[in-house]
Image (cartoon, rainbow, N blue to C red; front, side, top):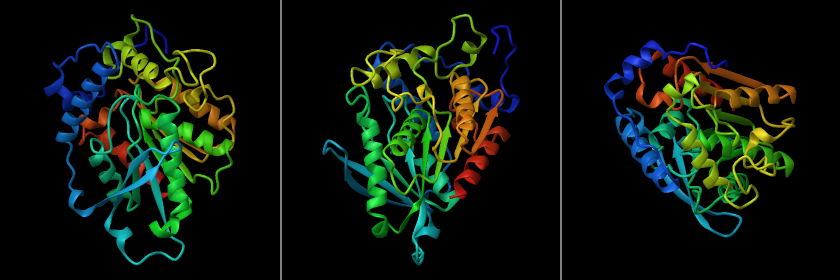
Length: 330
């Protein structure tokens, strides 16, 4: 996109956010301040998020161990249909990885989002409480996600899961984790292979940044500064020493992978006013070059995580419906 290109908000989205338009969050200076800001924003908008399916989705807490022996919680969300008579070969399920820029967020704060998709798809969702950075930099969060995938496969009979029909869904930083997980599963020849990958405005590339005079800056909800802090916290000193270092692992920053062949069929979406727009588009092109089945949606006029304050907007309803349809293909 050229720096002189005209940009504007989707008209319905602009009306939806008008009551909150005057709020300008402070500029974070480090991972701690970014975490506080993110958690405040996530909890605030999720508090406004309608969740009519809440009483119809059963929640259970399980536990599993990561590669280093750390015990973690794995939250199971069951819609009514999944609690009926077990299917002979088990049921499909979704491993859901929450967002938060690698430094914030939790299964609890994203709970309403998970419930929505569990109810709409009639699929069981599993959400691991993966560790956050900088306290647990790469590869710890990815190891937590991989161990959760292994848990689902190894306990498929007990959980009434068809291990050949496990999908992975990630939101923002969780989308980056999901893509890294899919790459690692491919390279380790994980079997059965992941059935479907659903990446919602995923955080894929530590090199992403735009100039201070770029017109997109006016609309960003996830800024250059936030992105830099999040990546620096996640990459740390383990496997990717500094942001944009040439030796950053492709499992940490999946956009760095040159060969995406062998990945599962992938759904991608992103807003046209999102800092991640170009990296998501480029990742989709690499998937196509690797002969992976790809469904890609670019929604003009909306920024990162736009749907949290625009539940009734046509663009939000369209995006949610497209995601639900993709997940139902499991």
